Image (cartoon, rainbow over all chains, first blue to last red):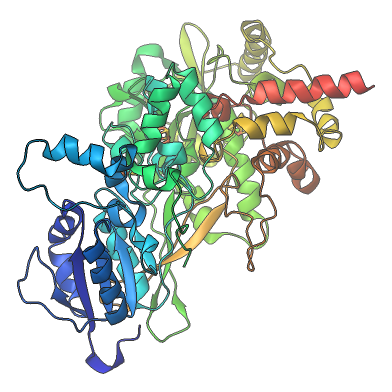
Amino acid sequence: MSDKKNKKVRIAFFDFADCEGCQLQLTYLNEQLVGLLDHVEIVNFREVISEKSDNYDIAIVEGSITRKHDEERVKEIRKNAKIVIAYGACACIGGVNGLRKKFTQQEAKDIVYKGREFPLEAGEPRPVHDVVKVDYYIHGCPTNNEETIKALKSILIGKGYQPPTYPVCVECKLKENVCLFEKRQVCMGPVTRAGCGAWCPSYGNICYGCRGLLDNPATQGEMDILKKHGYTLEELTQKFETYNLCRMMGEQNEPKKS
Amino acid sequence: MRYVSLQKNKLSQFVKSLQKKYKVVAPVKKENLFVFAEVEDPEEISIDYIPTILPPKKYFLPQHEKLGTFVKDSVSMAETNIDVEPTVLFGAHTCDIEGIECMDIVFHDSPLDPYFGKRKKSVIIIGYECMKPCDEYATCVTMDTLNPRAGYDIMITDIGDKYILHLNSPEGIEIGKNALFGKVTNERDMKNKLLKLREDKLKNFKVLLDAEYKELNKIFKGSYNSETWKDVGRKCVSCGNCTAVCPTCYCFDIYDDVKLDMSGGERRRVWDSCQLDEFATVAGGENFRKERSSRQRHRYYRKFDYSVIKYNKFFCVGCGRCTRTCMADISLIETVNSLTKEQKNAK
Ligand code: SF4
Ligand code: SF4
Ligand code: SF4
């Protein structure tokens, strides 16, 4: 995307099934966001502005796609946009919404809406790439602003953005953190895609795996490690499922590497 | 004068005097482990420590490092001023000093790496000799890195009632002129005393590798297709911890960081690892070391064979970090002993 003579790139944000936490992250960007505004114009951003426009170059899509009319809506967005970016765990990998897949739709409705007179319409949670082609991914729950800026800059200069294919441990070791396994805690870092700067372990928390499993995770190796720490198979599966159930239950399309 | 003495309760005072001229980095506690970090108060220093999480290589090849700047629409890159504060690396173990020596050979090999060179010149190395083993993972005895040999400006040895400082460079000799130090009148006696001490301390150390130093390379020559690599590969999760913590692993990746206003940016490097999926992937998608087993094997061969071919030197200094850090329990000692056993049985 070249910035031909002052023509700003128009960016629009959209949200689907999610908590909007990732969009909220962007409001913390402050002056960085202002710097970026020299090059882009934000035309749709519910967290900050109220006007809307269908004229945009880049669509940043947050949230999982669930209901029929969401499908239609995201297809419409794909038609309008030159570039679609899946933004945040729900959009990139299905995220915690995937946990719904542990139940049938009816069971889930009974749990959530039992006794409610007007149950809301529900659907199958899916990452965006299950419905339309996604050009780039910005992972995380929530997304990490440093990575978001890096990705946006890279996309704006036409280079595109490829998130790391290596695990969180790589960033964690570079920060010289004491490994949580050292403290008898169990961390999903070894099988989770890096890019967050080992956010959680750097603050003493385990990695929950919010950025999703690696393309080529050493599942058996990680399972062996977890077992060694006294976890049952059920607990192990739970650890993997929190963010990855959509993928584990087989997506229609594997995330495309752009 | 090559030796001076220091009273044991004067170590902090010595560090304080260094701080007048230098930034001092030394081992300090981090939770249950240790790291090298800048010290404000010398009392923070943990001089009895096991190898730090990352080795001191981070002061010569930082995890992230700026290489230069560029501006839009220009093909040239501006020279970078590598401004390094004069630093004292205090309390380095002999294995880590040997690690820095290995890095030095690589980065001074042609083409010379100016960034490393500049940093190396700005750091004064004050070692601290190990008198007892750190834990069950270090193989410094076999790798012959237990005793001070070269690569330091000053080596501090605890001889019981006091410290002896070996001044091993013009900078070291300069620092040795401090009034804190006592004279060592008979240098030859002191040398012999230290030799004897080093002979005696050996009985505190266990030999953990079944092969001897001189057999090691031969064992690797015969082990390329060993089943051991498959076992290691099955356990490995490719987290890259073993290479990050290794004092002699120096691979890095280069990337550009563009400024927000897109008018230019910085070219930077960051530590890379041969254990990662993409490391040996080339254009077109071919990956020369797709299997975890082949990546682990590669790491070991870089320590025990390829470096011998290229530099006539082992690039394992026996610090034990790779074993200590591995959450999948891949042990250098077990791996090398398993290869040794296979080779000896094959005879
Ligand atoms: S704390 Fe987690 S992310 Fe960090 S090195 Fe250990 S396993 Fe990896
Ligand atoms: S450390 Fe793990 S859970 Fe935390 S932000 Fe990174 S990927 Fe997500
Ligand atoms: S291979 Fe392991 S023991 Fe040898 S120098 Fe590297 S980290 Fe230390």
